[in-house]
Each structure stands twice: as C-alpha cells, then as structure tokens.
Length: 486
Image: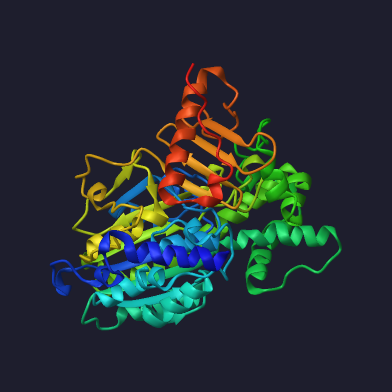
C-alpha cells in the first residue's frame, strides 16, 4: 500500500502543470551575489509560549529575543504535525506528511525521488548555494539519505554544544557564494526524560543513562539537593497553567491512542502531583534556556563574521510540548501547546525590525520552503500547498489564507482566526470546537452548543475542502460532513 501511495504521488508530480522537477532548480533573475545567505535555526519540542519575548516570565531567552527584536515574530504559526518525523518532512519538502501516507514517526515510509529532489537542501544547492547541515535530522530514511548526498554538507550529528561550535566554524569560513546553513538543536526535547525516568523509578527499574537523561538529572538535582522540595517548588517553579485540568468533553481518542498506550505518559497524567507538574515546567524552562545559549553561539559567530546584514535568519521549532496543560506532557496531540510553534524571521537592515504579527495564520512546514525560495530567487515547485511569507515580512500582503490545517496520528485540525476544529478518527466526542478568543486554554468543547452549529458546519466544510484538495485519503474515511441547512 505504501509503495502504491509513493508511485501515485510520483505520477501526479510529473504530470502536474507540465512542469518538470528540474524547473524548480533554476534561479529567476538575480545573480548569486544579490541573494542572501540563509541561516535556519530549529529547536525541538518548543511551544510558542516558550520565549521571554512572548511574555513568559518563567524563563530568559536573550538570543531568541534578540532575533525577534531584529525581525518579525509570528504568533499564529503551526506545525503540520506535532511530532518529529512528519513535521521535519514538511519543513524540508513543503508538503503535508499525509502525501506519503505518514501518520507519526514512521521513518521507513518511501519518499518518491521527485519529492527528495525538490527538498530544501537539493533545491538551494542546485541554485548555487553552499548548503550545510548540523544536528538532529530525524526525517524519513529515503529523504535523509538524499538530502545528505545531493544537498547538504554534514557538519556534525551532535545536537548540542558541539553543534553550535561547528556551525560557528562554518560561519567563520570564507564564502565565495551564498550559503544555506540548517542548524537543528535537540532541546528542549530532553524534557521527555523526566516522565520516562520517574515512571521507571516507580516500577523499581533503572533509569535511562544516556547523555540527554543525565543532563536532565543534573538539573533536577538542583531541586532535590535543596533539602525541601516543596519549598523549592513554591519559590522557584512556574505555577500550574490555567488549563491544567482535563476538559470534560475531551475526545476519548486522546486517552486511548495517546495516553494509555505509552506507560510514562499515563503515569504522569494519573500520578504526578501538582508539585511534580510544576517541577516538570521548571525543567522545561531550564532546557529552553540551555538551547538559547547554544543559539547565542551561532548568532554571535554570524555577527563576528560580518554576515548579519546579508543573512536571512529563520527560527522555529518542529512542534511543541504540552507543558502540563490538561495534565499532559510530550506532544502528538492537537492541543495548542503541542501544535502551536514559535516562528521568527530576521534580516538586519533589509526587513522591518521588532514586529509582532498576531493576524496571519502560518504553517511553518508548508510556508517556509516557498519563503526561502522567494528570498533565494528560486522558482519553487509548482504543486506546493504553502505560500511565501515574504509579503507579510515586507508589509505588502493584502490577501492571505483564512485557515491552516494540521495532521496527527489520529486526527486533523482546522485553525481559523477565532476558532479551532479538531476531528479524531475514533472514540467518543470525536469532534472538538474551541473558541480560542474566549477559551484560549481549550477547556470548553462547543460541538454540542446550538449557538455554534453554524460555526461547526463551516469548519467541517473547510476540512472537507482541504482533504479533497490535498487528496488526503487517510482523513477522508472519517470526516463528518456539514449538517443540511434547515
């Protein structure tokens, strides 16, 4: 079945609009000397609220804040899927994960070669860019192999301090043509190890001892060594979020397909005390600060090399973390903390500085590839569903999309300006309709509200339209159509 999907995509792409894949390799008009360098910085598992410039008082992120001060921070950016492999597939290809039949971290799914050839590294390399990659890859095997063979020079697979150092060395090199440097840090992803190890301890089993787990344990030792954990939590840990409790009409699919199948997730939701959740939030802040320090090394190297004024800098994350919302940690679900991500774009002296865009709905997985092609003066692949955000950055956009869509292993999400509609493929309360203006914590499911029947039907119709346009056969099987008008 997966091979059939791959071959069907291949045929569609070749036939699409009569455009051959090689057409996307050509630059449009500008010479390479006029095109900016591109520095793409990505963290892992950082939700949109985990920056001090976003108003979070429980951490300090000076490097990320400096990027925001020099550019535009988008407050309505979403991942195409709130888990690593599908989100990273989208960021490299500009396509929804469902286009290759991907639901979750299925790294062995076949990726047609035309999709690989039109991914970021190969696209920019064929257009004359020097492309380099460092850190976490975690894309499907076919795509990863193609990217590293036909696109990027691999600087290092280290995901922490050595990554920052190697990228600084790259930036200090002489550059006779524009470069594209993709920097992929692991943190604050290490937050996963707190629940994993706590669950192992509860069963009397040895905890994980890899470097990531050890790093978390060292941080947590600060709290344990205080002698009074309750006092440490009271004096140093963030409070519980306003949406800490589980919504009464939460889709049962979240429990049966996300929580219960993974022992440490279930352990945290059912057994963590309020103090443990607050400690979890404290650790998440510290891990975010640690990656901010690594980002600072890269940004300082860019400045020291005299490259700030001819380098476009993009910062985002592959997905978020639940951060104690609804008594959940980790990602994968379609709640805001999991799917809503940071996005900052900066180009000193060329783009407006210090702007916050609170209006435009962005898909980082779909929109960033067309955006980078736009700045690099490359014709993007003709059949991509995303759009360049360059007009938004330059204040020239007068028309933009009305909604974005995200996928998950068991569901789909439509986010409009005010509302959010989620549909899961099984269980009770399969639909969830949220008024984000009045209920940003997603505590009140409005699907059964007579006052919101028209809004619900409109969002059902939007999802049907998207699924039809994207040939998303996985979701088509469980869609709920709009009710007939009386």
